[in-house]
Amino acid sequence: MSHLDDIPSTPGKFKMMDKSPFFLHRTRWQSSVAKLAFWSLVFFGLLFIFFYRSPISNPDSSRRSLRTYSWGGPAWEKRVRSSARVRTRNGVSVLVTGAAGFVGTHVSAALKRRGDGVLGLDNFNDYYDTSLKRSRQALLERSGVFIVEGDINDLSLLKKLFEVVPFTHVMHLAAQAGVRYAMENPGSYVHSNIAGFVNLLEVCKSANPQPAIVWASSSSVYGLNTKVPFSEKDRTDQPASLYAATKKAGEEIAHTYNHIYGLSLTGLRFFTVYGPWGRPDMAYFFFTRDILKGKAISIFEGANHGTVARDFTYIDDIVKGCLGALDTAEKSTGSGGKKRGAAQLRVFNLGNTSPVPVTDLVSILERLLKVKAKRNMMKLPRNGDVPFTHANISSAQREFGYKPSTDLQTGLKKFVRWYLGYYKQGGKKVAAAA
Ligand SMILES: O=C(O)[C@H]1O[C@H](OP(=O)(O)OP(=O)(O)OC[C@H]2O[C@@H](n3ccc(=O)[nH]c3=O)[C@H](O)[C@@H]2O)[C@H](O)[C@@H](O)[C@H]1O
Image (tube, rainbow, N blue to C red):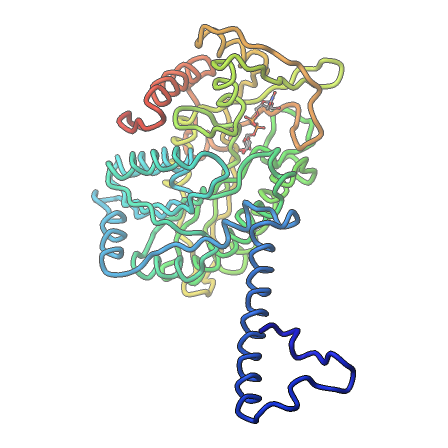
């Protein structure tokens, strides 16, 4: 029976008027069940279409936000505690968000190596190959770092983590990265870099003790700034991509939480970080893959064949910068959501100080891979890319002795060695140290 059966065939005359009351009651009951079933079907069908098929809502971000993670329980809490346990006298206990990410993995491993307590948090989203993230997770697991699977937008999970462990520090590296992808999936940048950051700060501000927070900003905040090298004092109000705008927003949000709640906050502006276990969405990584496959690569150039260059920074130098920032971070001054005095608020460039044209990056890769690239020169697309980055690092040098020591040639050699080893084994290699 369908809901259509209740509609009179002739106006003013019902088909079932001559049926018995019992039959009538049963039919009505069946009809309401059928109606309910039908509308439920329609409702869930629409929900399905909205979240999984709609071209308006980006499939990636929607699926990510719908994902549920399982956490909690005595065994889980035991793992959390054990991973975060400090193993040296002056060690700190750090929550590392984005621990299965490129920088997150290296920083977590380095903290663990020196005896700090480290707990990872990562949502394992599928922005790029998740098997690489799983390999990094396996690597960290072997050195005693547990990565909790969950999203920084999950308030109850974050609260739980702070209930179980009184973290002294948060190294916040979870983010939606990538400059060009922001035009494809703007929502994911707002979700992770703004909403997620605010959520994390909400929990940190209410924690007792409040942790000191070091977090990843980006060189992209300099946007259309033309004064080089980029100094922290330069203007950052002309972002060229939504990615940059969300990182800039993060810096303003950091100011607010520092001002109102006394949270100690240090933002690090990373300059095009590269190296082993890197991100497959970055040019040096997919250039390597495509050169090896004999596939043409697009190399961007500026107006009138102008050079496009980056201050490529090797991962080990970035790790040193992260640890330096963490070690010089002062305590937050508030507790339980109340400010008790002025707290530290800092921002530092972490770059290499020697920009290299992208064409030179390709030449180095050709030499290391012993394969000639099929170069396809093209005009820098209007998709958020900037032509040039160059860091002034004197602030970081002064504050915590930051001094990058790996040039692009040396760093790429290490990357290529890792890349060939990792993918020769089908991307399953986890033996090499991070
Ligand atoms: O410092 C940052 O804050 C950012 O660094 C990184 O962004 P970028 O510096 O843009 O790196 P990346 O994409 O590797 O392009 C490298 C160069 O290759 C050029 N490029 C790129 C693609 C291409 O097909 N061709 C090309 O010439 C391109 O024009 C560029 O000159 C991070 O991804 C970002 O998450 C953020 O952390």
